[in-house]
Image (cartoon, rainbow, N blue to C red):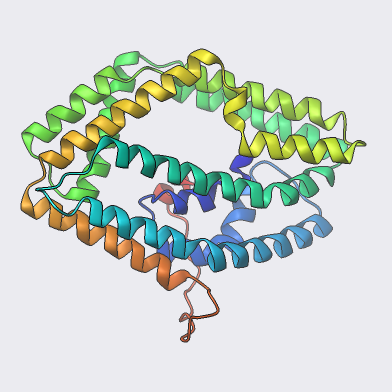
Length: 304
């Protein structure tokens, strides 16, 4: 359910989509994505349009400069090969990212509650029917798969994205990724079980729509503190995999060539400039030039 606004998060956590291309088009990308799950009437669509406009104004006016500063600080911390970034610093950076996410979820929580409260019984049943259909596809892709294929996919995914950030990897760096992918705890089944748990929480919540205070408080809890609904085993796997990934970044940082570090610095600073450019702080003196709506390619559709 929280993936209603997942496109914002995708931009926030530095996906491969062109930030300057995607961000100005969120006003129609979000309704397009939401349409896959909810059939809204004209009044609901009108309210949603106003909500998205207001939230995007909040986001670009209060959050993007913070994202830019985060990236510039990370660039400084990873810029000196003689003073490599530490585990404590990287762990702190990860918590900062989680904080960005929680702040976003807290901000949109009242609007998510309003949207869900506006749904009719028929709309709710259609929503869960579409979620069940999506669950079957996700299970076939991420759960009912040969474990070795999953390891291979993880390795391929990480290699692709590391190449984007540091350019061509050395054999030693590729070996680090191979070791990382083989040691990660499999979480596909846990993730699917968690997804079903969250959906069940929403289904039960809809039976208490008359208690709007409880409904809104529960929505806030589900969006901001979703980790509370994970099983202990799933949470332990997440923490283990997070530590492995931090270790991979640390080891990779120590193996960066001069050219790779330069490439990384360029990417981090470029993305920081993108966020600053897209910021709509009142201090901005020059307006953004118009950006035409993008056409959704297959690759972009998969990413969002």
